[in-house]
Amino acid sequence: MNVIQRIHQLDVFVFSWFMARKNGKRLARIGRFISFSADGPLYVVTDIVLWHFHYRLLARIIAFGFALERCLYFAIKLGFKRNRPADTLKNFHSYITPSDKFSFPSGHTSGAFFVAYCLAQAFPSYYLLFYIWATHVGLSRLLLGVHFPTDTLMGALLGVGCAALMVALLHGILPY
Image (tube, rainbow, N blue to C red; front, side):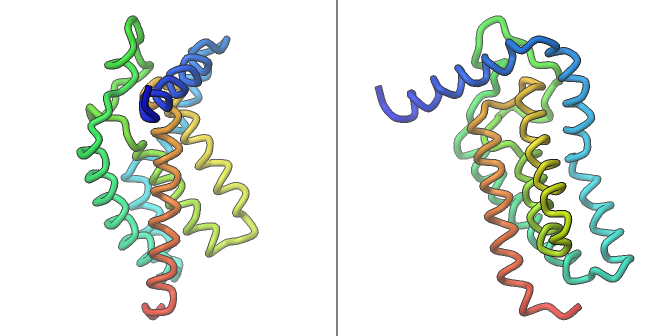
C-alpha cells in the first residue's frame, strides 16, 4: 500500500470520527455560521475597512496575497481533483452543498489562515483570537462534511505560506 493510500485511510478514519460525534447536527449549525465568516466576500469588506482606517499596507498585502493564494488554490484543486467525502464515502451526505466539486485543499481554511496570519502581523496582541477563528473555520469544514482533515491541513499551510511570502515581499517595498 502506498503512502497516498495510507494517508487517505487515516483521513477517512479521522473524518468518520468527527462525523460520529454526538450532537453532529447542532455542531453543523454552528459550523455553518463559522464557515460563513470565512466566505470570500467578507474578506473584500475587511480589506475595504482596513483601507478606510488607513491600514493601507495591510490592505495591499491582503489584496495582492489573496490574488496569489487563489491562483495557487485553484491550480492545486484542479491538479489533484480529490473528490469530496460525499462523493467518496458510501451512504454519506454532507450537511451543506459545497460550491465546487473537489475538496483538496480547503479554500475556506486557506483564506482564514491567510487572513489570520496577516492580521496577527498587524495586531499581534490579538494573534491568538485570529488563529482560534481560523482553526474553527477548518474544523467547521470537517463538521459540515465537505472536507477531509488533510484538505483543511493543506489549506492552512497554503494560507499561511502565501501570507508569509506576501508580508515578506511587500512589507519593505510598498509605501503606506
